[in-house]
Image (tube, rainbow, N blue to C red; front, side, top):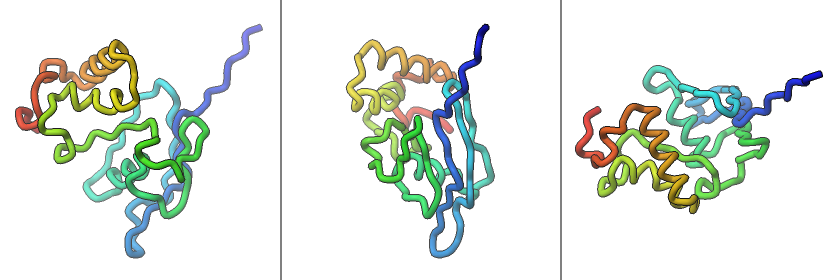
Length: 143
């Protein structure tokens, strides 16, 4: 008899709230993402998307709630020790690096083997349909 292995969440955000001067930027958000899922965070300008991502990356501490990655609470883990990468919209890209170098940066910091870095960079470029822009620098891109 085959038994089905229970799915274990990769990322769990539990009742996450962030307030600035008494105003909620993120208000009691909960979500679960499982390994292999593709997830999109969509919403109107000012609804808290970037604040949520900044908390996930460790750049902003939550006012309350939990961020669990593979069952580990990231509350007291500094950004540089989190196995999470964040690609900013434009201003925080390294202007002297190409698109592929920007993507590879965090992987190199994690000291992954070159072959794995190349494979993962190519996978990400394919995912966002940017293979033809891999050798361009940020100022050579539009939008």
